[in-house]
Image: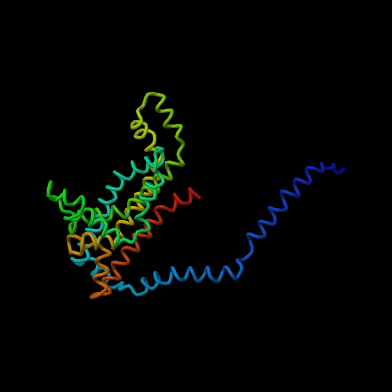
Length: 286
């Protein structure tokens, strides 16, 4: 004997199940042509130049090109300067991100806009700004030179400063977003147990936001490694002292295109490694 079903249950099943079936059918359909064509054109626009770089690469002479003295100097200098710039970003960027995420103060929106300005500022303009601030006649550089004998422009330290200037917003944005997502009640609980605010930050907050700090540090390191405009404007292009990989690519393109392609492939490989390293974090966020 068939058991009669409640009308409300039937209605709920109808209203709840039909949309699911319709959504399943809609998701299984192909993309409409007006969207598919420009999407494929956009994909080709991004992929073809990278494929061309791989196709035109001098694979047979690649070991010889990458082990030459000039290329090795640029590689080593780039790795060292990018690492030091990332360390600078961590030391001053993490506290800045905490300040923006946890402390209410007048003008916080303006400060946040100022922090993110290097993201949209042309790198050459950033280099000029650094010269005006930290050059020998700059508003701060004059005092550094006369009081401490420190000169930053056209030195290896200048490369680190230029790279940190353009890379730090990536770290600050990543860490601030992680701090806003973290539950502040853990810090409040630590405070009720007698921990100072700095102790709570060091023992509670830092372990909570460690993935965000790592992701921001990787992004900052990759951005510092690829910096060109601010570096050449503030630090110049001196082989062995300030000539990083992007500058070496620009210089080699004028005289040795194969070496330029080889260096470009190294930067491409680093970028792919960064994306692969951050994939798990992005998927977890999604």
